[in-house]
Length: 430
DNA sequence: TCTGGGGTCCTAGGACCC
DNA sequence: TCTGGGGTCCTAGGACCC
Image (cartoon, rainbow, N blue to C red):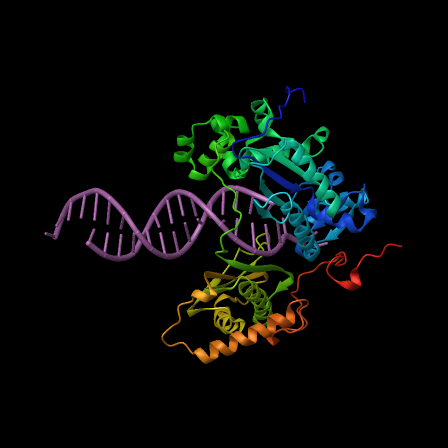
């Protein structure tokens, strides 16, 4: 690096580590299928639509994140790439293992996404970069997943440190930005769009103003940025200067919305099939709602055609407000049946539909309504409990309204087995 | 032919009230 | 009838994240 020596006294101020799994979905697949090593691998989104994870070999081919698969299929074939559908059950289980491993290092842990966590290293003894290396080694050994670790006094800088660790092989996956004298020269090499919280739109507006790198942004006037853009952008400026604006959120707030939406395996043109799909999504959404011990006041149903087709974009939606917040799938399905005719359009080829539950309240804090039918509520509640218990491990019982043939169902053409969550799919070592 | 899913936060603008 | 300011709440839409 040639950036001067890093000293190793213990740290007093706040210190964050961002641990990010490398190419997470691809890494999960490689743990159970050694043939995927040293070979280009991609994982695709639902319906095998877009590239959502790429191995290093694929990145080297210049294939960007999120590109539609059909546009790069030939290129991938030319390089004998392995192409896999998403196996969310596997990734969720592997994520749990990684997070449990991280929790052994510190209780101050924020699970930020399926493949990322922030840790507070404040007060931990020893050199922070040694801790980083230990984290990396342990996660790899216990789960098989390679991670990168970025360490810095703010979350935004930890993100940058992590990014730097990923892009400099000599660092072996760990970079401690809090102990470097060359922060400005690093920020100078980072495009402003790469900064956490600055997206494409914002960077397009910043560049003409001369703010093209993370360093430019760090040196900008925070008050002016707030007036011109937003308070969040101003916070990012301060964070780049080492001033904490985003704290660790160890016990996250309850969700404000629960959404289940999917693109269809093939376009839906009939009210009947739209009803099936919406019933099935609603059934899943209500399950999530009960898992989180919440009730919903508002149900929104929406559907849309493809934004890429020649037909004008069409995205009707309709909402239902319950007299009393509910967690009963039955009650919600009844409501959905009244909403769907308002959403359905003959002559529209629907490409996607979804349900949104909002106005969420804890189940034990629901205000009962004067005209509530309590016996029905209690009966429904018992029924839902039984349903959830039956479906806990594997879906065994479903509503007739969800349909049987389900021609709209999401397609996964090349999905790997459920290595870690189904006995029959257990990998065998011979 | 074929373009993901699930979230959060912020702001602007309108309605309404005093 | 005319004139004015300040505050809150709600919603839609935009931007961001992975």
